[in-house]
Structure formats: C-alpha cells, structure tokens
Image (cartoon, rainbow, N blue to C red; front, side, top):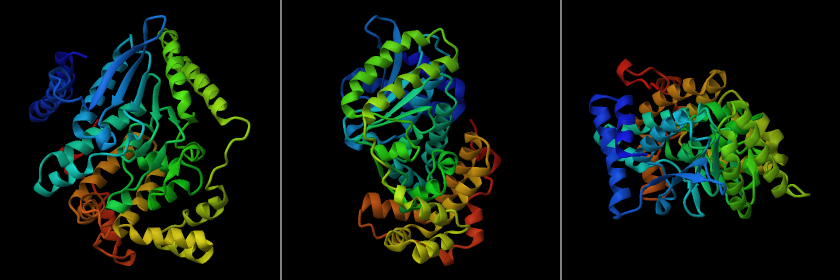
Length: 406
C-alpha cells in the first residue's frame, strides 16, 4: 500500500492530534521500509499463485529479536491494512504469521505501556485503544483470515489470532494468557473467547496462566486446526492455489473452501493415532473447581478435592496478583453474559485504564519483565484484602471522552 493511501486511511479514521500521531507512526514505518537502515516491524505483501493472480495478502510480524511482540505502530499499521483489504476486491483472504521459528507473537509491548503510564503519556491509552480496535477488526473481517500460530503465542499474539475463523497450531505452538502474573488480566477479547471455552477450562487458563503446547492448543479449542511444521510450506502453497477461486464467491463459500483445505491438512497431520489432550485427566476437577463463585472458593476446592495436582494449581494462584485474580474472575463471568466481542472489548478497555491507575500492573511488569526477580510485592497482598469495592472499580465507566469506541 502506498504512503499516501496509508495516510489517507489514518486521517479518515482519526482527525486532529490523534490523527497526526497515527500519521507520524505510519511515516516512520514507511521510512524504515524504504531507507534500508533497518527491517520493517511488519511486512505486507501480496502472494500470487503459481498460475498467477491474487492469492492472498500476507501479514508478517517481523520483530524476531523481540519474539514479534506487538507494539503500537504495528497495531496501527495492521489495522489500516486490514480495513483496506476488506474493501479491496483483489484480496480474497489474509494470512498472518510471525517471522522466524520461535514465535508467532509473544505478546504486546507492555514495558513501553507501563513506562508511558508512569509519566502520563498518551500511549497508555492509545496502545490499548488501537490494539482492541484491531482485535475487533479481525473478529468481523469479511474474508477468510488465517492465523498461522507457529511458535510462542501469548497475550497480544492471541488477540491477533483467536478472533479469526482459522487458527492453525503446530508442534512448536506455545499458548498462554499469563496476565495475572503481571498484575493485569487476560485482555484482547479474553472475556469473549475464554468464557466460551468448555467447562471451567477458560477460567483455569485465565487465572493460572497455564501453558498449552502443540496439539493441546487445538484440543483446548484455542486453535481450529493442527498441522506439523513440515506441512507449513504445503499449506501456504495450497492456500495460494485456492486464493483466485475465492474472488468471485460469496463469504460463506469462501470460508467453506478454506475450512475444507485446512481440515484435510489437519487430518494428514493427526495420522492414525491422534494424541490425547494432556489435561483430559484433570478436566473433572478443572470443571468443578473453576466454576466456583469466587476465587477463594476455587482455591479451597483445589486444596480440598484436587489432590496433588490441585495443590500445585493452588500454589500457582498464590503467586499471582490477588487483585488480578479477582478482576479476571469477574471479567469472565461478565464476558459470558455479553453478546458480542465489541461489548467485551469496551469492558476490557475500562479495566485496562483502571489498572493503569493502580499498583500491581507496574509492580508485576517490574518483577517479571524488567528486574526479572519474580518477587512481586502485590498490594493488596492477599485475596481477603481485595474488597468488592476494589473489584467493582475496574468495571466503572470512564469519562465519556475516554471510553473505547470503534
């Protein structure tokens, strides 16, 4: 996409000072692509089939050293490109993946956000605002959107993939939503998709930050398909071959054909002896414990009836921010009652801004990402000291001019 067209997209969406900041971000990206001084953080290109013709638009996250972590400029650029691709009749589908073999996207650029929050800089609002707009744009994208979640997929990386109709995991995929360990909550639409996982699985993953690997990401319902890494080149080739056929089809038929292709590759990768879900043995205790009405009741149930495994999970919860645990529990309970991703993201944006005014988010980032001593001093330090008023505050409306909007 040309520089003028990108700037037009940004200016059309946001005027005034905000539009100016977005244009600055986009121009910095364009200069990095044209100057040769450094690699662009995200690469967009049109992939053609061997027969020629538009096959799909590729989005490549390109911050290998940072494990393709999503920053604000990347979120702005991907959002503008997606909106342009939605209207472009020559783009039949979008495929997103991460550069390198280690990560699809290891999360959002949380350190930058906390530094901005400490000094009152607008990035603390704008990053969450545009990241959530991007999450929603993925969820409502009118064409097939295929996320190849090969490698680490956490936090912001989950938001780039899980709201799409096609999420393809590999044996290298490592999924987690570890936000309660840094004083935050599973955002990027977590209240929508996690609350809709079967039984107590979503609440378990949200509160403990448990890591799912490989096929388990599919078994949990986070990925829609699983293929081996050796199959990825074939997958890309077959998607490219399919692309031109999609151009003149209606949306439902496009989705159906992509589903058929991925189903076929998934079956080939599974083989004759599919591996079982590693958490299957613990599903009864997960469903019972993590359907309890409060976090305190979850911990008590695990300690009372969960055996050795339950004790380990209770010990994990004891290390997390008590405030984060309680607001996350409330978040998923409310998310299950909300009917749309947009409603959930609006709620989560409020939560993010109240967290920016608190203590634990900054302390958690310090302990886990900055000093890396993993010795966070939470305040309050225990579940019993986190009052109902403290929890409810995170869900209060913001001033009208500060609320999240599409």
